[in-house]
Length: 444
Image 1: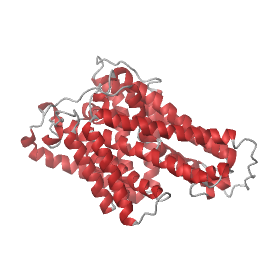
Image 2 (image 1 turned 30 degrees about the vertical axis):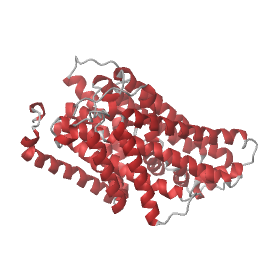
Image 3 (image 1 turned 180 degrees about the vertical axis):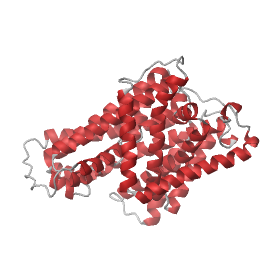
Image 4 (image 1 turned 180 degrees about the horizontal axis):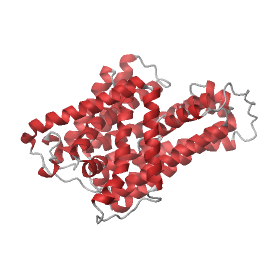
């Protein structure tokens, strides 16, 4: 089989990956959790904006690294060059085992739950639908990166359109509709509450790093990785902020806080019962784009590791006709299905988030390391605001991880277990690696 992937993804495809993965179901359901802790629209909008700006700074760090090293695997490559193959291996282990596959499984199950709005689905039917979604999207990504990109563009475009229509409805249909005054807040705004909500908002922006995994297949990556991250995160931030503004034009904070399905109740206020149906359809479209993005990008991690001799050689193969990392796509789909069948996806994915954030932070910090280690390397893009924007992102990331350690000690402990298991797997791999011909440049 050929060992070369083709650069078939344009700027639009890369932007669709960023937007499609970041916007899942969070903007439809998360506002009620935020409204329970923050007392006013101003505070709520502020936290969404601040979280967006901080995430944007992280994306700028990845933009510099992606333009400098536009290779398949992205984040894995940055960690390998800055911190050595050990941490690159553990990062790949965490994302392959739990982050991309666990995220795809969780989203697929959420898809089947929302599909219940249109069809009566029992537990078996729900799992069958979830598995079918993963299978169909895996087939598209198996037969071609262009096919996977087409799915990504289509469903990301529909997702954006759905959100724009909901936002426009609040300003057109909802114009002049009196919003009942909210009762006095049950609790004052405190730094602790703001911090907890900030952590939730940062999670809503999670996923922008995944576009780096397919950098080796992006045309003119020195420009387009940067463009995708900047344009994509700008679109995401604007949609998040304006969606919240739209909610406030129709509902007060207390109503949002008491609603389990904020977007559905919002749409019902606007156009009646049919609004809930439209929102359920919007969530389905949004989830398909996010699942496809996870499948498309996630397969590139074991492929990149296998090329370095840090995973089974079979995963380094490229299909001679379709020019995709076919074995890696198949493996990712099968593992996602196993997670769905066993029901372990939710626990595994939730436990892996803190571990994933560790690697986001280490990858961003790689900008510091590589500017010292490789000062003469070509850098088509240099991070705006360096070093202050980078320092701010790293500081907030460290705070976020500390916040999670205190607030969620058990999941945090399990995140540590995942990382330690990855380190043990690395030790075992080094013992048995000769059969896989580990590259000499990776031996440390």
